[in-house]
Length: 107
Image (cartoon, rainbow, N blue to C red; front, top):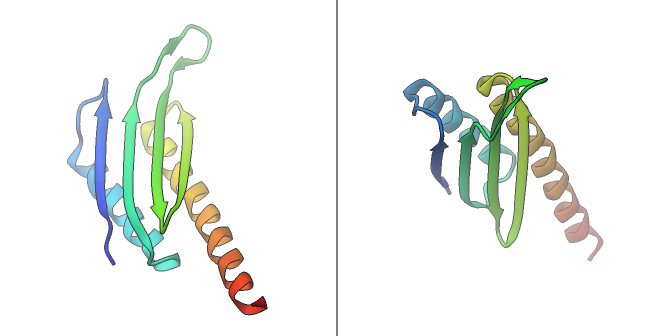
């Protein structure tokens, strides 16, 4: 099942290239677990900190058959924040999938 991807930009201009990258990364996540029902990616620039400079935030919300996952990553580059957030999401999905498989095998 291919999940619908909602990409929300807050305090940023939308980018077709970034949308394409996000869609590819969500498709990659479906290879690890095809039970992703819903996905939303929120990209924003939450604050301008004096010492850290401009920060960007990439937040991913996934719903895997009743098990919601939320991942947030901050970085100075929106592209790096998106990449790191999806890597974290991939690790968490693999962990959830492995746990479900082990529970299924033990019962």
